[in-house]
Structures are given as C-alpha cells and as structure tokens.
Length: 140
Ligand code: ZN
Image 1: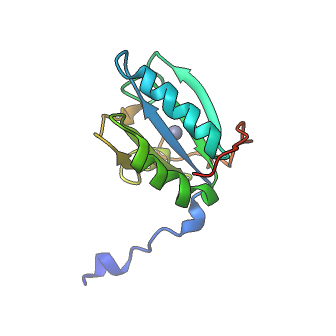
Image 2 (image 1 turned 135 degrees about the vertical axis):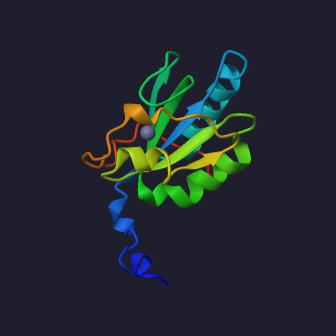
Image 3 (image 1 turned 45 degrees about the vertical axis):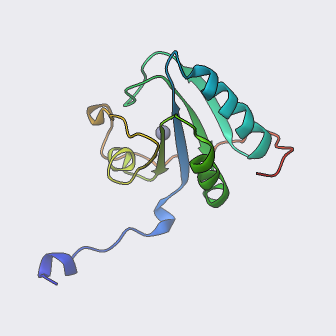
C-alpha cells in the first residue's frame, strides 16, 4: 500500500441518514411503475413521493421517489431486485455529499441511466428519514 491509500479513511456507515429509491418510467412503462408503487405501499413502511412526469433535479427521466429509513434497506432493496421488471431504479444513500451519493455511492437496479451531476451540490445537510405515508398490510 502506498502513502496515499494509508491517508484515506473509509466512510463510516453512520454517515448514511436515510436512503432514496428513484423509480424511472416512460409512457410505455408508466403502468408498470404504478403497479410497483402499489405493491410497495402494501408491503413497506416508506414515504412514496410525487410523480415527476417532467424532469426534476439530476434525473434524466420521469420518476417518483421512495424515501426510506436505514432499517428498511435489507428487505426493501432485495425485494426491488426481484420485482422491478423492466424499470430502472437508482438506490442512493443520503449523506452530506449529494453529488457523490447520486454517482459514486449509488447502486442501480436494472439498466443504469444518466445522472446530471451538475445539478447537485458537493456538500449539504444529510436528509433525515421522512415521515412514512404507507400502511403496509402484506409481508414482502
Ligand atoms: Zn434522491
């Protein structure tokens, strides 16, 4: 190992205040996105965000956001892996580094899409978990 590697400390998990899943769709797949959203609401304690048919923030395609707490990750993300169908989903942590969160720290389920990094700040306050707006009745 060189000196540069020794001087870099890894990020601690406690840097992650919450997560987002961004579920992308287009005219052809909007019905699939509606069905997935319904399934999510039946099964997970999360915050379902508004539909964004028009481009918003760094996102290169229409999407809606699902905000969720760290504790939901081990069940929600694997479930999305199995059930996303043809939809692309961006999973990203919320730390104090929004640009990194949406790029180098992010994971994709399905086909990766573009992220408009110029729309994101390098540094910001981390987004805490939001108030859930679902009332799940089914086990995933
Ligand atoms: Zn997000």
